[in-house]
Length: 335
Ligand code: SIN
Image (cartoon, rainbow, N blue to C red):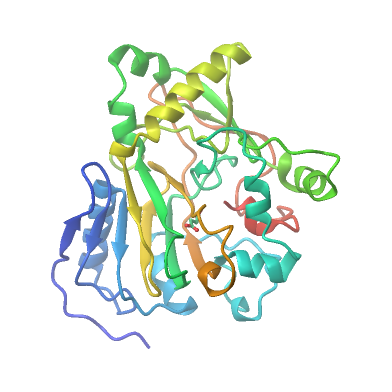
């Protein structure tokens, strides 16, 4: 049973110039008051990602916190892990768990197929028509160094563009696919299997600029991992424009970086941020490489552009559609 906590307002310390804030006086496992949840939501919308240290969440309290922010995704998982029994809302993200489940650190292997230096920056599940709105990630075990996560503010990136480019982007749409940032080799069985299982499962067309359903702000809604092309442009034009937007949205000035410790939690607005998961521990061995993270995500709205354009799927179902087929690489397809 969660204890209640006598906190009347939350203490926030900004993490960087454009994005991120540390929330310093809150026990997320406590029975949070409605007013505190509303305040948390308000600061989340302002700072886009919130960081919490020394928390004591387990799967049950993690799910309970997630539910304070919306309806959680509960897709059936093939992550057949005893400790996830009864918690279909939790996605475990871990090289070691991957190795146990499929015999390989799949993400590290696929990183070798990245086709640009910015591949890896992503908006969770932007290949679906209704990407998650709010994500909560907690660290169970992390390496003694490395393994940080970076976030970037997509509103700041949009606002940093010149008025002429903003105006052009306001009316554009782009296709998002799972493997947009990879060149997979169909002669390698594992890569062919991955392409077949999740390559074309879900493809969505989103506005290049998204209007936030709660704040009305505009943000770039493209990301280096999943955005494959801009509709209505030649491949060369599309590649040049996307590369420019990817460079813009990953400019260090719009980003913040979080070093995890066991018990750390990050909550982000997946509608208006992109993030880059740890990429600097693939070469490490033993305890230095152990990283076990758990994530919940709330259901998101179908994105809408400044001109009223609404995203649509060209393949696959929305997340959590009843009867949706979840492939063996389910964990990966949710990212
Ligand atoms: C994610 O991509 O949602 C997880 C980020 C991380 O593992 O650092």
